[in-house]
Length: 280
Image (cartoon, rainbow, N blue to C red):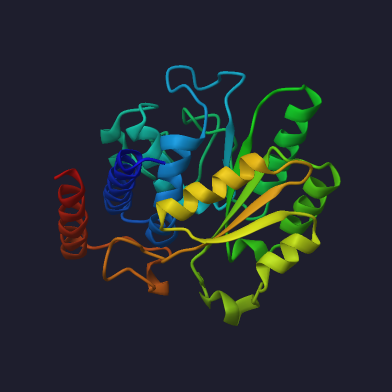
């Protein structure tokens, strides 16, 4: 990855974070914390990694992305809008009754959404099925799925992992956003899933643990994914919940609530200042 590519990804991520705050504030509800922590991987997936066509969202040979932690739709919507799947200004309609941008992704309503998700644990199961289908059809298609660290407390997730290893789905990349916080508090206090990497290895995955808010580490992880054969791949991303908005960072209370007018203004000042710095 060149310095210019990295800079472009950082700018993209900054714009995604702005889109997240715009959407959640306009909805007066939503999940900013986990959306912000995952903004960098959204930027990498849609800025460098995946093959897709915004003008033809149903392109048969596109890579697939499944947001298993579906409540973090504000981040995915922002990435899709910025890549031309739909107008950026529509992000302000998030969760409105007549909007196609609902609180969780809908493949029937929203261009660029490959699977409707929301019930935690189900997205990775569908992603594994998609990867197996691509193998069966001899399609050169990769499937990516983003999970939350709280989500992997669900038993269905581990059934999907076992399935993926059994069928040697080396076209499947499971990405775990490990920001350490879930709706009820610290993940380690609610139901500690550690050591995640060792458990994934025991289930038959090739695994890397990275700083998920560092583009150099993200890039190296996906390079390793492409070099891995015969087994599914997992990226455990250590991230900061609420990344990019100072008063939201590492604060569990921002898992699922919207900023008020004053908080919105402060967040936008910080995010726009960061964007201006990157674009200078």
